[in-house]
Image 1 (cartoon, each protein chain N blue to C red):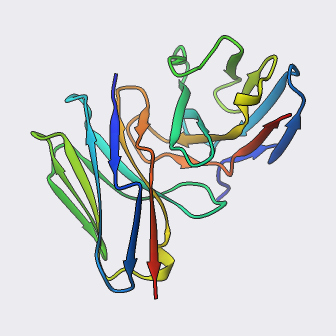
Image 2 (image 1 turned 90 degrees about the vertical axis):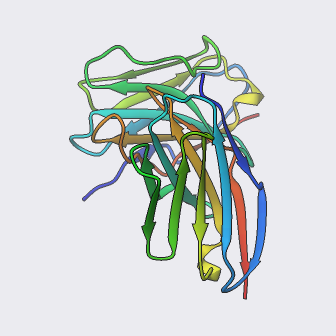
Length: 113
Length: 110
């Protein structure tokens, strides 16, 4: 079946611009996660959605970052007033249950000039 | 919050040798410990996981051990092959999310 998809695959933007990154999880998966992976680094947790519960935003690095999940499916990560340090690969993952294997999308490579 | 330390950061072995990667975690309440493999330019993929109610789990050439008392867990790969070359990440479930180690770059030379 279809896996997790993300768009765009690459995004180049100028410092100060806003960007939106999209994630389509596996159908039926109730849990959705966003991570950030900087060059040579591990995966940094950003935000977690579980069903209709309020999201866990504890990993968001600043108030320039926000995310929403509409209808319990598609999620959008928005970064406002982008900075060069926001350059990274943004990975989305979904899971059929809270404590279970997470299936990752291919990521969006964000470059802020 | 949960903190996961992973060692070594790089590991080079000859084909056929064994490879061991170790992780420690800080939150004694963590109860799920997966290992992900990420090949260059690819997405991370789960290779094995273990829950806190068992001490060891094997899947062909891969095994994971968990010591809850010491709060550490390890990945063991036997009879390594060139296709095992990748970055390996350990993680611990911290109540609402996985906290990942910084990764180990494994290189298997033939």
